[in-house]
Length: 399
Image 1 (tube, one colour):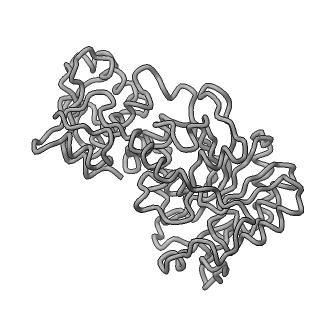
Image 2: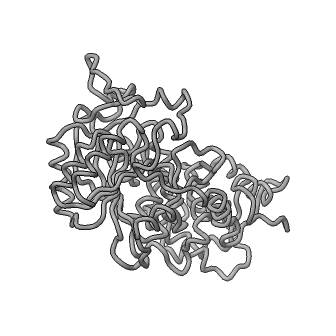
Image 3: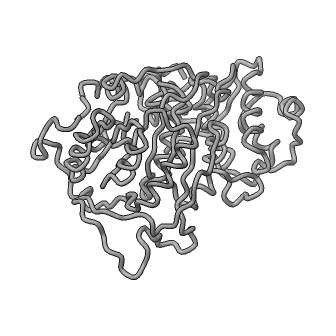
């Protein structure tokens, strides 16, 4: 149990803690993922943002065949772009906007016409010349960067694909200053979550928020993102819809104010191949999911981190234990609360239940997100030196 874990990758760190036994014992903040990210950041620190025009396409990193075949969705409806500008204007749109993968620039143009200042982060080189020509027309209101917001600050540098970007490098270049967590949001991000990697991106952003790293090291960055209707339903799920309720739901609701800004049908979006060719409709709507049970709409949601997310007992140091607690609880969703407490912690379960005002016969899925936070903080408050027990299968649950 004396194995140093601060410099190990997450999976190895947990393996070292777990050892050969069935349980690993974790105190507050035992797994220091923060240090791992710092090491990755040093490894990538020499990278510079590829601000356009800084190099020709022939000099840019080449795309592997796998990524050439990938398609992405873009806003191609001027009517939708106008609607979004109106919504964002009502939401105080005078702040700097980072637009993720603007593609043909329909929304970019509408934002610029509304006097917004935009930094366009585009990962498809095909669209860069058009965006650069637009930049030259608007006199400093638009900057274009060849990078992918959704791959920014990769948690595992070994699997990151170009174009990657380090937020510290990007923000320093544009003079974006970090602000305290208690202050207003420093900037807003708008875009569309890639449908193929939607869930992975949502988990990656959760880790960034709770650890106050990546863009969240600059403050409570506001996300305005289109997400599939099905994924939105999971994010806002509660004990009232237990079939959708999961650890992801709890973590996002504890971390952020989630606001539904707009619902748009699939048909308002265009799908482009990596070569920049728009795919034609073949008797079905663009982006129509293969699973017919999934909703046919895209939801624009606003995710604003809460000022009171962090407390004395839930911090950017011990958040990983909170994650593990939730994952273990939802792995055994039909267990009673008392059973979970006995598996999670050696602390007196009866005393914990009394403090949080819950009874042991409740199912774990009957707890609301703030109940889980209260449960975690109550156990953290315990004077016991050993507060947590986790089954070593937790290693397999890491994203």
